[in-house]
Image (cartoon, rainbow, N blue to C red):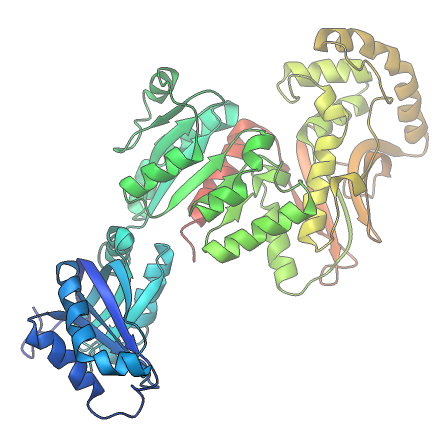
Length: 521
């Protein structure tokens, strides 16, 4: 209820929407400064019983725009054509412009002019729903603010405005790609945290799950208890257009694609995902370490579409590495030097080497403990560490490619290349003697071996280093990660981030945190 006798602290009372509208624009040099032109427009429409829903006029008086019901469009055009026949022939009036399939969303309130920021919140809500505003109208009493928008997006706009002004329960609509260890653990965490989310007025639903072969979608939200059976019985493969259509049909306004795969093909579609209106949360580091041109395209797509690309887990799993780097550099800090242990697998192995195990024994132990990839060569090659170092360098503003990173593999070049995993493991003891000599040489100088990534004077390198007891990385072992950031703000002592950076549980937790960040604006 709106009126002088009604009192409430809330200035916004209701939302209304009107669909199936068309907007006509009468414009031309003959409009400016000409008395009675607006009257002529509206008298012509009134004569033919055309109801006008909304009116807006430019301050330069060059044009008048107004909305009518689609059913009255032909009648309105005929009325205007007849009324302005001479002006049209003389070129004083341009042909009437028509935009169809529009809708009006109106914020209705009382004494709204006494409350700052309501219009800004209204327009920000429309932007959040990926809605472009065609026209705006506001009455002089500020009891209503109206926006003309694309009719297909009307329900989305109303849904977001309702969340922001009334229920205050924002939604997150998750589509998970990749159901391996991290993906499965993420689903478990989403289920466990439902009560926690509810207490914070957050509605998080899992609407889609996909693996490399199948896709399962459910408009009611996927039940956590039987998603594996539903996915296994699906005959549909993942397709962006299909998911995009699903989002539109169900009016999901905060869709988040979560990539827990290591797929190059999916990473190559991130720009398409963002352009389609999805946030992207990636445990997959293939996109952030692709070409620098593609990396720039990703950043541009987030800005263009008002969507987020989040990849905290790309460097330190659950460790807050990217957040801290972006905060530092966003505040004007500059990287001077960096050194870090960026692989939980190699951290575990090199700790075992320090305890007296041989390279082959340390690798077997790490593999049996679940610290390595199924093929330990993926860890020992150093490529994964090089990818993480590249991400850090790019966050610091360095325009580098993966090929610019100097990589020293733990293994000799070409060692056991083309062999199976079992054949590789069988040959690995042949490297023990030489590696033991490196360990002894370092120990004679009071040092230990660590696999370190460094950035110094614009040069990036990953490889085996001997570090002394005073070095911040000498105590990092047993699966821990550590990053020492020497910057303009943090010197001579570096800013150190340390913690466990491997494992499905901490990685899934980092992905979950990124999903929640899609709510911040």
